[in-house]
Length: 304
Image (tube, rainbow, N blue to C red; front, side, top):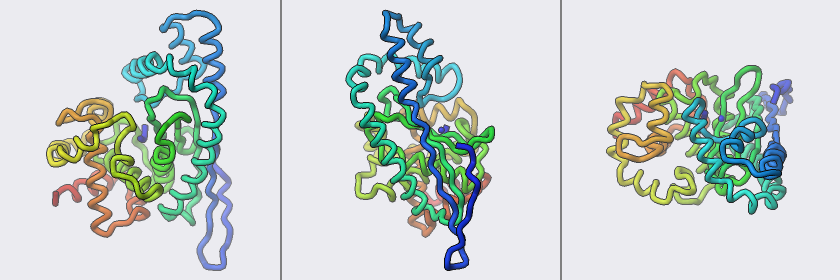
């Protein structure tokens, strides 16, 4: 999801053909050690849940939640629910870190190939951290002199697809400057998430559609999405231009018009699939300007 490396020097190499090959750089910032320090401090002596959360905020503080008080409350619940599972995770962290780093480099190369970025300088920062077993991740746009940055929990059980998805976001945010983040117009969110889901499908092919669209713990989400497709699509159209955190919550973390969570993703999967079926390509769609994303989604939905 988009919620979330100093820029490289942009060195270009002249090829035998008139085209230029640009640098593709993936910097990995491993924060697993920060969690291990926090966990050692939090277990050195008995502390209550309130004190533990304050310590987590000060020493670790990474969770895939929206900004603000609502996100803080979600993070607190995630940490509380995850706490009893950490003792079994700690011995696995070294292996998980190595797997995450290798998989990230594989998917970074694959996504760049799929999106046709050979002549585009791409520099992405990946922060690996210990999450709360929610298998979520996020990408933030370039800001304050920092490039697009992905935050990925190493324990994500859907790691390869999740990395392909988030790396798509990070690459697109460099091909097309995107100013909005969480709270973007609903149609823009659909465009970005649809592109990421369909690119991950191309990067890790051959799996059921649910693998690219559902969270691992959402056992019935995909079947609900398919059965409610028409209702989801019809009800979301009036909100395509609406923006802000409240409506973003409705279509992502909260309950949408049909009672489903993540209705924006459900609609996005089908709309982006329709755009691809019409002859559009992933490299072409990855270069649609931000101010045309909502209109592109709306035009595709008019013929539903």
